[in-house]
Length: 179
Image (cartoon, rainbow, N blue to C red; front, top):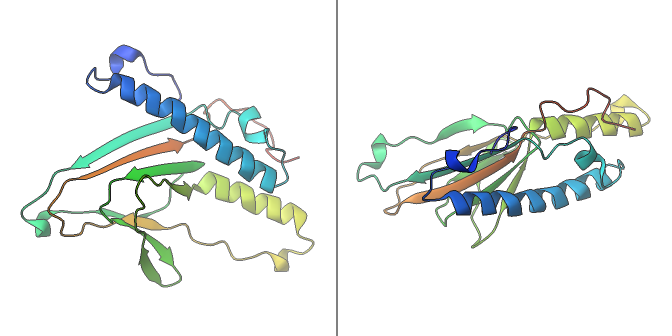
């Protein structure tokens, strides 16, 4: 999935139906979460939908087979997500860590649970809302890091994860997002 809707024939036949269905349901879940976030920011529940924030989506599936030589495997270095929100579904292999203060904390997957990472764009927007609603700049809270990474543990099973990200529409109206 991308800013331009994928043509059905461009999705491998072996998973075409599942990918399209996943995108359909993931978009509904993400839009519901986005409505709650927009409402919580005082922007009105439909603001992010109005701005077409859910139109540009990225869907990535990873499958890492078991490696008999775990010292040869690598994870993903620490990073933040650039877009609006990323939804992560992973099997029960613990690989995600988030930065909390000076420490890396393991995020234990829950069966069937989804993990939502707030992206840089949404975090920046939340800061702007706070700036407009806080009387003095000195009262602004320090921006929390949304730094995370994927580390490889020594597991003797394959690892599977699906990432679905709202990137924000590339042709969104060039306007101030805030009231």
